[in-house]
Image 1 (spheres, rainbow, N blue to C red):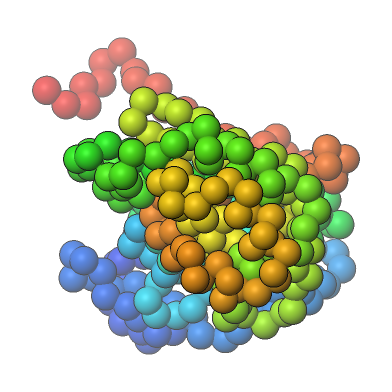
Image 2 (cartoon, rainbow, N blue to C red):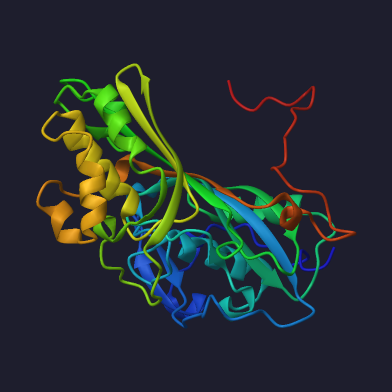
Length: 333
């Protein structure tokens, strides 16, 4: 099996110095350090020919991380994934060309983030590299599946739609087990009014009023299509689920912020088309602050079925290796 002979299963935190790991280091809570390589990679550069492309579905608790996008310090999700892949494949990050479908912000979680990377060699089986990657990652990040991808597949530009959830804990006293994973609203919200307001987001609109100024490079069209926006009551939790062809920087959190004001009955549901029509972020800022990141989840990234079909002769998709207990083996008392 090519590329697997030299797999290392030592955790990233075992790197004793920047010299040994080839880059800058950041401290971990337990006193160890983790290295991050500094050279920038252009995610839009097409990989060279005769390379193999691999798709990953990644889940993470974003509480401790500075979002998805690469930066050496403080650490990001992309940094940890790249460093795990660098140690396993012995390739530098320019050759790996790791790209994520969405650049989730600081504190935002994901269940279905999608990313791709490239290697100059193929794998006959993906279970071993899958186990090795998760063995190197911190427990807050897990690769849920790995599969071979077609050359034309691109985690970001091939996207058909994305689904986000935003969770609101709507009780007088916050449940501490939801503290890092849902926004607490002590105000009793009106779900019916929020549903009425959410309907106004559905369709093709210019969402300039709901986009913060992006810190990244590219200019993006403010015209986006929202296919559905549901508000579901789940006991004390209100779950807002929105699906669209794409989203601007902090667009979902800003839409949620306005729905919260409607839910508090501070604003009527028909305020939504008024704010959309203004095409001015300042108009929204006058009536609502951005919702905090810890209630937001990237749940899934959807693609056309055709582009997800693996190339001929590819190894089976890896969903993780299942361990079985032998008859005479006792793991604990």
